[in-house]
Image 1 (cartoon, rainbow, N blue to C red):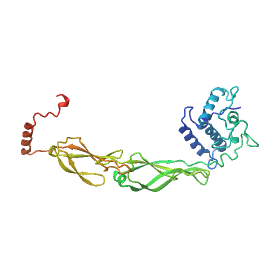
Image 2: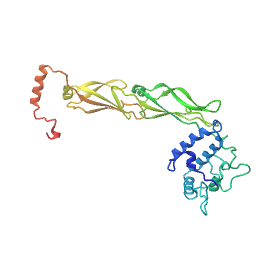
Image 3: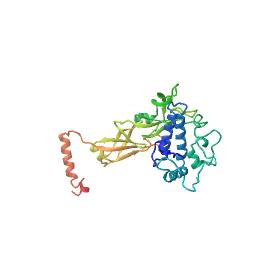
Image 4: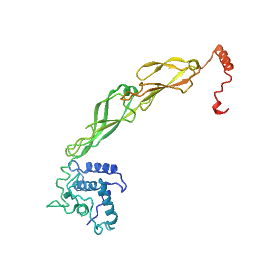
Length: 323
């Protein structure tokens, strides 16, 4: 009996993760599905990858197969089960999830089946497996760049993306699809918006996949975003920092007046509660103060600075540097 290399059938390594195995199976099943494939011997290839996936997707059956692969496969490509071999996770109790065991190979029957093959459904038969198999369409991933104001208020955007579907001759083609999508207020950078059933169509009557839109934020000239918080740097004059002041500050929604505490330094942060991105738990706006100097001083201002320097001569702003 010939040995079946299920890993090779799916084109994955022995260390492949369950996600990699599933991804490989879906890709190959879509390629060789008898409803759409024009490949030579597509039905046989489709059956082979279905058998491989039936084993490798199940942790117990995969572990058993790995043992068989290690100790039962011969260098000439044939197979001989180890002495006394008996499957502990066999399919005898009807544990199939994707297909009827009678459509699988002699190798599969030898390892897991326990003699389930019946009248006319031998190795070469395809029967109900494959032609009647349903497959969900693939999900489509796309990115959508938005301005901060669009994220803050919510908006409607037109989105174009590519889906894969069979044409009248059964060949898989790419088709451009365009939707008007309503973006709810408060979406964050990297967050996904799932649109049910808007992905690629399914096969054999299977349901379509979904469209997953990943939100990207375009750079803003004034604001930066951290999670749901919005940060803005606000310049203030030295005397506003020293004496305190009320200054006008922009937010994404509107302008507000903010009180600068007396004696503020550059880098001080003032929190405006609930002025960040909206949501069940709205973010805040963080105002970062930045003291700026006039580009030129009048002679009167220079005199006042000299008087200030004399009055505050004991103040050392570099004391923490020990200089």
